[in-house]
Structure formats: structure tokens, C-alpha cells
Image (cartoon, rainbow, N blue to C red):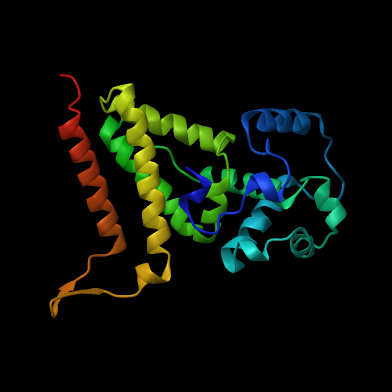
Length: 232
């Protein structure tokens, strides 16, 4: 997913000044630092910081999330927060990966296609629950533990459904783009406006957003299977 996927996505390259923020080495080094860190007596943890930041974004949007505002929400000072996160951009990377960790992976007993459908619906469910975080998600490298866990499962599901790697990889990426696009539209004002479609003066009932998504999901997978039939 690229930064340009959603208008207004913040740039991690320019805002935080650190082009390595969120990449694999950054996550690895962060994990090592956490293992060496001693618990603080003030009770302020990175988990609490992330949850409070997410709650603030969910209610008021990304613009409301500043280090000073978050410190106020946590009844502490900005200096205390900077002991846990170096910048607002780093905080957003952590919040995004936390949200992706809310995704429930499909049951191992399902078929490959059923797993693809399950994970697509789960990603949509989680993003619908946090629509105001979407611009930050599309700007992040998405290489945190939760993101990698989801990507490995998603690509594995495509392979298990019988698609060759040359098909499974772009198909998985196209599916992600489809989910992101439907979430962005369905949570926008345009996607919530009318329940009726008018064509030449005739009105047609508009299906729900969930029905449209499931129709598109099934049609995409049916077309993929028709064009690239798995080997028998």
C-alpha cells in the first residue's frame, strides 16, 4: 500500500525526519531496547500510551493527536512520553500495528478460499472500527509484528487456495487495495449519503455497504479462479 492511496496521508519520511522509522531494522532494534528497559514506577507503559492515543484518534481524528494533548490525557508531562516514544510519527507507527493486531486470523480448518474471505472481512471490520486512523495506516511501512503476521497469513491463504506465487502475490495486494478502498469510501460522507440509486428517473434500492463488499469480494475471487484455475 502506498502513501498516495488515501488523500491527506501523513509522510513518515518528512514529518519525523527519520526515513528508517517503521522498517524491519527499526522494529528489531526497538524490541531489543524494550527487553533491556526496566519498568518505571510512574505506571506509564507503552501499551497504555498506545491505547490512549488510539482512543483519542477514534473520537477526534488524527489532527487531535499531539504529544502535548496525549500527555494531558494521561495526566503526565511531554517529557515522560518522550521516554517511551521519540515522536508523534513513531507513536502512529505503533498505533497502526496495534490496530492490525486486532485482526482475528481464520481457523486453520477452513479451506484456502474461505480463509481469504475471512481475512478480508476481518481487515475490513477492524478498519471500519477505526476509520480515522486510515491515513496513518496507508503512510506506514507496515512491517511491524502484527502487520507481518497478517501479511504472511494473507499470502499463505492465497497459496493454499491453489494459486501459483506469481498470481497469489498480486492477487493478495489487489485484495488489500480493494478492502482499503471500500473502507475509505464507506466511511466517507459520500458513501453514507443515499440509500437509493436513480437512473433515468427510476429508483433502485441500494444494497448495504456490507452487501456490496461481499459481492465484490466473491466476484473478485470467482474471476481470479476462472482466469487462473488452480491445478487439479
